[in-house]
Image (tube, rainbow, N blue to C red; front, side):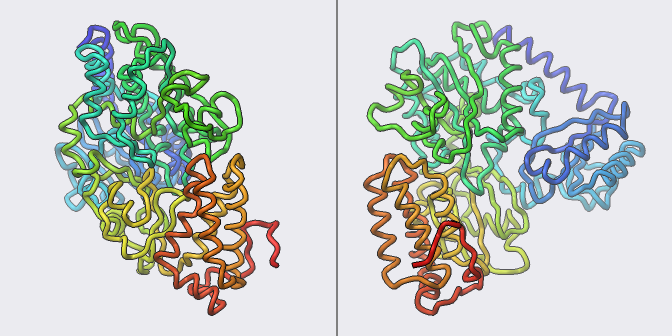
Length: 572
């Protein structure tokens, strides 16, 4: 351990000891987008005012248990953490205040507990990691989410943060770090699943004095919020990974690219960068080494296509987010004409664990084709929506829905799931038993993508869902490629005609021809994959389409009420 990092760690350990075993209780209020939506900020304000100097009240990140928000936990000095879920502000003051005054938990409202010893009076309570939503998880990138204050870098350091960076700078050269990432088998988590070490290897040999590593946190997929979840809850995990990527590729600068309007991720990321500079973890001669690296947070407007790597670079340069012609590829000519490499938030967030624990330890998690974990955002018609990190291949889609997400609401049956973002369509029961990993899901005509799983019950019409997906894709097309721009529009018009029971016999073949033109004539995946939602829906749910076209009725009653997604649409 370097002298510089040893001083940071010693200070952080002392502060952590004061928080967890000092003379004041520590109250943690979970704050992420889901916590804020459920009232966490009001709870924090109420507890801060009510408890005063009796306890330390902190915001921490989200544990991903969206169904249980707002979550508040109380840790008496040196004791276990006791969690309360689904609290209102007034109830939180009463329950937490009573717990602190008496030293005993309110057993009737305890959600779970975590610690070495079970708190007195909680014989019937469940350990946190015995909950059905926590037991199947293997938390690597999210291991500290919900445990630490994302705005306090010392809490991250006290729990092993920046240990990997210090080890890399002190004991490894850039080539050794790159080899470790290659040997780990890490594949990109943005959707393409390309081997990360190979991608870094494209950039590393380039001798240019200015090279960029870009972190893509645009995350525009409906149903995916794990990138934002990491940035909201533990931004230093991403930042440490970004610095390691810069070191491994001999780069000079890093950018964290976030869509404007996402306040919590933006604020957390900016604070993390600011604190890292102040601690000597960014800037010149990091931790006394010869490695220098600068990072900044860049924002762009609302654009789904900005998630495509060359469109992202255009956006950072202040231009309209539109894909570039390739070659040249970013590793040769990227941001501002300099060699560049682009990675997803989750991809970079795994790097600290790989360097800290070793490539072999990372490969022990997951399966033969995909090492590591999948961070799933399970939403839709489930009882326990949330963000869950599970070992690749350890569960099937059906098991994830039934065992983690608590099954389908109101006792209904699962009809479909949609994964991989809006460029992939609904998958039927034939795909429910596919293991959750990149290659297995790909065999179903779907994609694991960035981890969003939207679950539909028996009341969902595949035609209605598909037209919603295609309407999103049409709206988000940047318009640069004629086949994508016009093809998306015509496909939405056709799907709306079918959904209103005005479909024609040749509409399905017409959409297939549109999709073929889009695939051949589009620069980026937005157009190339644009027909996928329709193709997948027809593979698994052709009966829903035939019901609309042949029988002139929606099989579930979800369509045919005159609703139009494009107000300019006129029937022929």
